[in-house]
Structures are given as C-alpha cells and as structure tokens.
Image (spheres, rainbow, N blue to C red):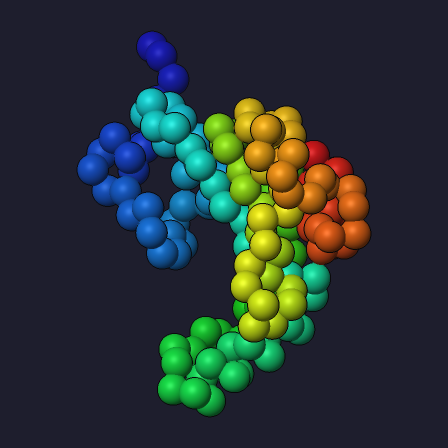
Length: 143
C-alpha cells in the first residue's frame, strides 16, 4: 500500500488564491501550486516595524476604510518574516517591496528568481543594503 494522498486544494477545485486562507499555510499553498504545475510569483510587502501597520490601519478606519484585527498585527508580521526564506526558496519569483515611508508609494527593493537575486535586482536595491527594511533583511538571510 502507498502513502495516503494529501488533499491539494488546487487540484481538488477548492483553491482560493486571493485573500486569507486560514486552513492553508502560505508556504504549503505554494507547494500545492508547484505540484499542480503552476508558476509561482510572490510579492512581499514589508514595513520596518509592525507599529507602522497598526497606525495605517487606524488612519484607514478613521477615513471610512475597512478594519483589520489589530491584535493580530505583531503575530502576522512575525509569521510573515519566518515564512519569507521558504517563500524565497519555493517561489519561481519573489519580489520584495518596501512600504515603510508613508504616502511615498511602494518601492521594489529586491527581486529573486529561483531563490537567487534576479536580473531585476540590477535596477533596484540589492538585499543587504539599508534600503531593505532591517527586519526583512535579517529574515531573508536566515533562509
């Protein structure tokens, strides 16, 4: 007898590729996508500190925007950093954006193709410089 098969939400027609999937870890979803033959392009939007995210949510809500559970922000921030090295290894392409400076847009600060710095990195800032948020830079190096 072989190993029991693990249900793949992509091949079982249950995939929800947008939004939050509480029943499926992001890294596992990437593995499912790869196993199903999908090319995976991941974008990681980072700030230097989770307190920035909290402040922005409060401003958004004050302006009539949608609410996010603020008690989850520090844990979500940490979990995202912990997942980053695996996402870098598993995704075909990973684009890292810095959104630390409020109201100045998002900057592409690093690009990885198949886990290594890709060609696009030549016209964006390389990982390891001060332009990549420090906690994110540290998370990438752990992988």
